[in-house]
Length: 114
Image (tube, rainbow, N blue to C red; front, side, top):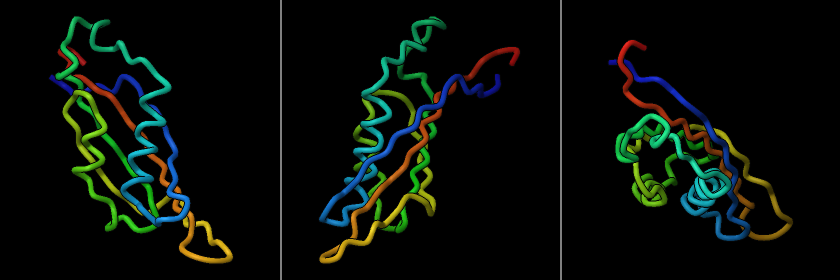
């Protein structure tokens, strides 16, 4: 069987004052997930737990993201996470910069004959 990507969703999240990279990443995941109702598993007669979910998170300080905390935002699926340099740190005239995180969520299934 081969892993076949069925869809990709995108999201953006921010931490306005706390410079919280994990919080911004969680908000970006919620942004991508909450604007969609993914009925993909049912279309193929599969269980939602069979969904192979690849999450890519882009932030300016990848080492500051608690991956386990971000994965908790997913209600089901087998999650694989990659945190890369990306997003934005937007300077403010006082205090810590505003942190912006971007995510791409790709959903795949193992499919025969693919």
